[in-house]
Image 1 (cartoon, rainbow, N blue to C red):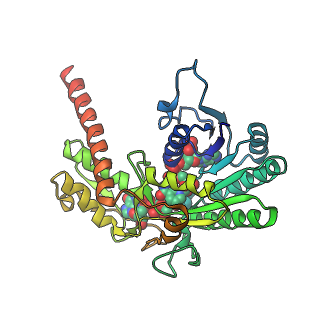
Image 2 (cartoon, rainbow, N blue to C red):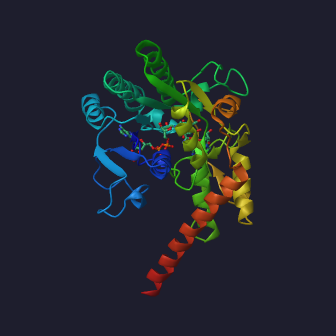
Image 3 (spheres, rainbow, N blue to C red):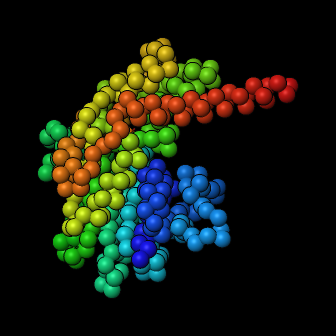
Length: 340
Ligand code: NAP
Ligand code: GDD
């Protein structure tokens, strides 16, 4: 029988890759989409098929903060699996919008769990909660593993810690199949352009094409365990196929600094990053997470999952994509100029 899944955050980086993966596995995928004045489905538009074929992707308007509508939708769709990926996911922005961040990340997760709890009374449902390495904050142990205590450093991280614990509570209290994936940073050519890796690859491509002169960044010393989003959505799926609900660290087990990533990207284009990068205090955070390094042993042993893509390859994928975008932009500019 065809399995069905509901993805919140389907228009985001991870939601788009997860939708692709589930459709390839034969799922009927439902996606929750926020209404906005312009279309937000750019990352998933390619997944629409011939309208005469049986659909594999259906979108529904909704918002994580609207618990009643979310419950109605879940009870109506009766999905086998729910992946809660929706969030105000930018750490720096969470300092400007702490209450909104808590509402989407914390209360939003609770709304998903409540809807699942109600459905679970009549039909089994499995819930994946997108937890984050950001919860380790000012880290109390390195590398970070499932047992490492959380020490959150930002409004975003505090909200994710709340969602993590509610997921565990619903598992214990209501016998709901609810699992946390504690994912370390993962990037791709679909990464939002205000996250540091994509900001760097976009700028490097534009600098190479003469479209931009400088790149303004904050703390270059921060270290992250960066993986490829395509690999990480496979881990999400495996977490829900496991024979019991549990919590898993998903990481590469390698850490590099923002400076290291800059060098990888600019060297790939035969450029020296130091000629272009300037430090701007606006991009520093009130409290920084200095070092993230995950220990993915449990995921390897219990899920058979490992990160397939290293940082060098990831940087290459992203820069090749963004160089092509910059080439198109340069071509368009010269065409416009040539028209007088
Ligand atoms: P993303 O690209 O920022 O996508 C976030 C998604 O959430 C978008 O589809 C967004 O919709 C949606 N959303 C935001 N507010 C919402 C609301 N109130 N109601 C419904 N949907 C809402 O994030 P991502 O990188 O794919 O990450 C996916 C999830 O994993 C997030 O929960 C994030 O916090 C978590 N996570 C990410 C990483 C990482 O390194 N990428 C690591 C650990 C955990 P719009 O398109 O309309 O904005
Ligand atoms: N965004 C950004 N912009 N970050 C910068 C900049 C800049 O100009 N300059 C330096 N950085 C540093 C940040 O201070 C941080 O230490 C690091 O680069 C990574 O920043 P982001 O790419 O914004 O990611 P993040 O680690 O804060 O958060 C991401 O990963 C979390 C998992 O650990 C997000 O995807 C979160 O949603 C996710 O939970």
